Image 1 (cartoon, rainbow over the protein chains, first blue to last red):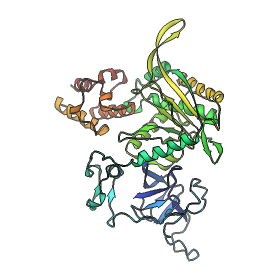
Image 2: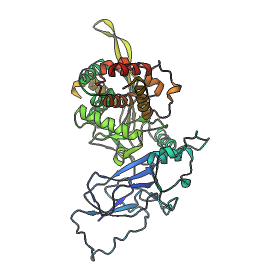
Image 3: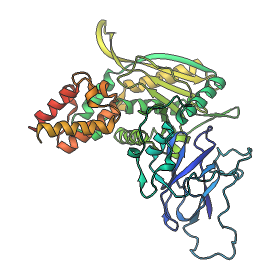
Image 4: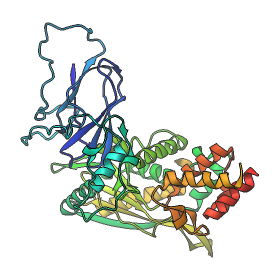
Length: 387
Length: 81
């Protein structure tokens, strides 16, 4: 038996509300299955299970907000017999309470603070509410309690009223907390250069000529791969700075700053961004962006980015210098590419140029090394066939 | 598909991507992506959906003919005619 706990999805997360139980009691679960959804400040997060077995029981009712680390379900291992177990009299659902001290699978669980008792669900008749509807209700201050409980409440049920002069939304608060901490704690330094993208664009045009729309490459996928490969080579820009110490990461989980139509942004990770070919990468990128725009992430995607890329796409402005997302130590910014005159073989030629910047943590690296990292990204983008 | 139904169809797909923008409020001759605030990823989603439902290849080489709302509408009408 293992307890499945409310995961921590970042240093700024204290609690989460269980909003979906996607597996019924007694059903089998497999490592990587999504078994629940949790509403946090950042939206609805899909939660994966990390082992094979059976879902023995849910410990937390739907709609209940519990602190990070609270057991929310019991998973029975596949090889445990499905019988009463007289030798093990304890596994009766304990009330959700303070986080257990350190579970190696959950390094982020805060260990010290005393935790208030979990809040009761806001309504007694269990409501089923889609994440998008829940978010809009939270943004507009709409009272969900007045709605019927005999069907799933969708976005259409929530009036899209103009936001009142309300306090900051949850999203705004989450961004504010992370960015304030970053500017307070991280001694940023900044580097900038330009990258010529003519070859990258030609590569994409040739690659896409015979592909159906859903398989086509986008420039963003080349950015992702170029940054990820460089980050693997220069580990001082890929990892976490926590408790006064930098821990580089072997894998590159590339956080992508993704703008949300409803306001705000999130930067979930494209996991293992150095792995697989470009065709596979672009499919994963589209899947991630699509899910994020619908407000669905997976837990690891929010908790695990090791470095972030912020790109302005092709309708932005010339340049962006990012703010590091703690506990990461670097953020790469790529501006909107534009046609610029460039001297090639002693003649002036029109070329597609983008500004590229690096903001990095001076506690971990210096400008000299940062310049090498930035040049490695540029070189990767100028040799798209190596990506 | 008739001209009218292609219009309705295009509005439906744009509405999925940019639900908060009414087609009556946009300039049909201006840049489509600017008017609907859609990025390259959204545009790919739109092109994929249109291509699938209308059985059109929507080649990248034709993107220049899909710049504004009116352009895209005319393109879809000509390709399905």
